[in-house]
Length: 233
Image (cartoon, helix red, strand yellow):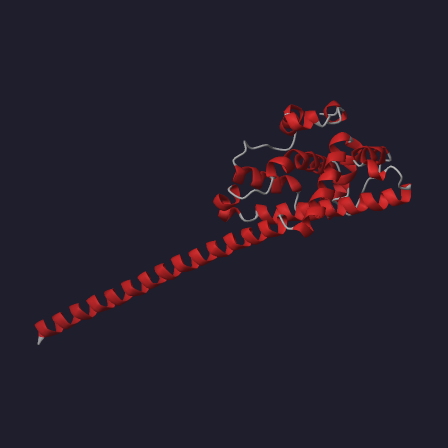
């Protein structure tokens, strides 16, 4: 009986091992399937973001937001104002010098009253908030970086202007105990660092390297970036 028992035990162990291996293989394939489904979900979400970004209804949001950023390029005080408005406390007052820049860039606004201009400025700035939220969502799709790189979100155009605001936002927060204590919203420079990595840009850290990048950027020079940015650098 002993040999038979030994054979039975050996066969039992073999089948147990096979069953366990089968479970492992099943889990492995389930994991691969879940990973593939997750990747497809992320890629689909990027496609949906792209459709939203290029939609006709979103075009005014982009136009207004870019106008706001272009004014910030030409007027450092306005750029500081925008950056401060990303926090709920210690917000700067609107610099009236920016109104002239708005009217220079949009001649049709020259006949508007100061009250109307403030409403227009507020609208463009709120649309900029939408763009910042959009790029924040996009930056968190890093698992599909290869897809993002091949979709035209016009990041080359937005990047230099957004780095201006990101740098000033960090300077404001670093210089304020109150903001550091009470404000926890994601910082813009974190979003841009993620997007830069996705798009393959050399890494930039807030500080002197940002000002060097801004000072050397051909498009910003074409737009006559406010020299005041570099006097403080």
